[in-house]
Image 1 (cartoon, helix red, strand yellow):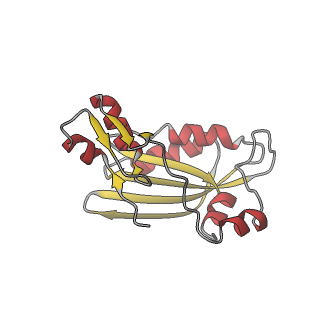
Image 2 (tube, rainbow, N blue to C red; image 1 turned 90 degrees about the horizontal axis):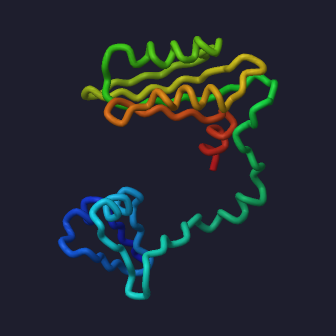
Length: 168
């Protein structure tokens, strides 16, 4: 079954206050937000728009049964934690310094770093180990708070989640 997507641009182009989509259409979160801001209602022929159930593929059930559940660690875990920090955005002097300064405040150690700059935009990946007893959630919150909508975005995930996410 072919699926259609409704984007924020589609919502802006629609001149009426109501947008009717086909069953199974995927409306992006940005389209929903734009419709709400512009006072437009998104619906189907049968009623209000309801996001379709995600298509997890034929192996989804087996993966859920066989792969261990690996949530991010809870605060209070006293083990040293390895995390993956990614940052993407407009390149400017000081971005790497901001991230490493925040890590230094928590005595975290950078084990590996990869950075690429293309046409004024950077992509940075850090493999970081936190000291024993450092709550994962606090450092994650501090680093992700460095994100700015007009500059760059920072995401932090536990190394186990990152590793298993790329295995699936």
